[in-house]
Length: 376
Image 1 (spheres, rainbow, N blue to C red):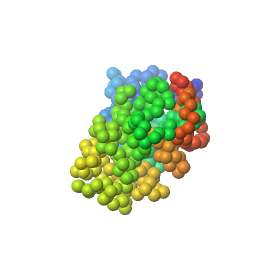
Image 2 (cartoon, rainbow, N blue to C red; image 1 turned 180 degrees about the vertical axis):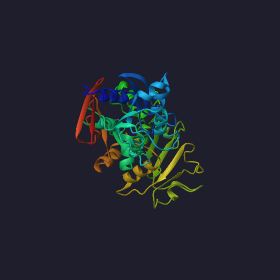
Image 3 (cartoon, one colour; image 1 turned 90 degrees about the vertical axis):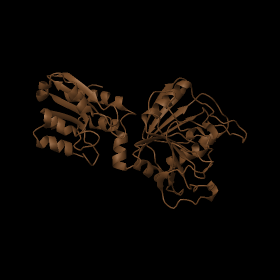
Image 4 (cartoon, rainbow, N blue to C red; image 1 turned 60 degrees about the vertical axis):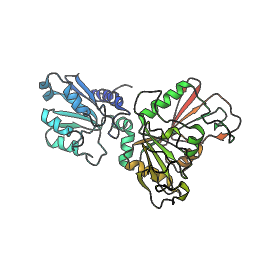
């Protein structure tokens, strides 16, 4: 993409740096920064991991001759912070080092910042140039912006369908447990990469019963996402992979048994509240598993998103099954869908969800077509 001026050229570089933090910095945003002196980049930095130094700090640390900071321009794709969190405010550092000019991609939607960084720098004599590649900068941090503005995670739907439009075969009661693969190993590795980039992955009861997925990133490097499982009536076996304690699992259910009681004896939830699961019943999983009681009415999906918001989850991939995917699609609760179409024909089975959006991208992944559909 051609750049119309130097500011856009250097902001593009900030975005290239920022994306390197994907999957590592949440619930913080992805931020890249660089310092330019006489049209030369003298240092670069990005936010590498949650709790560690911000991008501006890493860029300043990279300048060997600190005297140049008083003549340099700082570029950053998100407004510098003004509040004390796990690290000190970046605006304090900018003022302390005497950096005279700051070019910013987009304001920070976090109420603790929300224009205060721009105001503080301007009031202290720093030339601030905001809004450079603003749309691109917002798109990079769409998870962060959605969480702050809409008070819910960014929602990604993912499924694979056969060439004739089925996501699974009809399975008799005695069918072996495990997935009926539609795509290639390359596509499955890509899915694991996606999981490493998001904070949570959600599936319904039938997906766990039929496929027994691990929902981790074993075929990619990165963090395992929070495993979120819908189990309204506590049908799932404690031996299921999602309860193997290899990573955290959050179960949405209508009832939680009291110590020593069976699931059938539990009363349906009257209000949605996340709480630690009681590990006492012998038939229940324990360890890294928590329960979230919700009411399974027409607002169940909204309750789930509200609770994930409270858990600081800024993004979730919903991987099935058909009932769960359709429940979010019907309520318009999705931001993008990633749909594989494989070469196999099932002839019969569970129909694929149908979805339409405002924009679509497509590409071939080995022998499968991948379509990415956006809701807004």
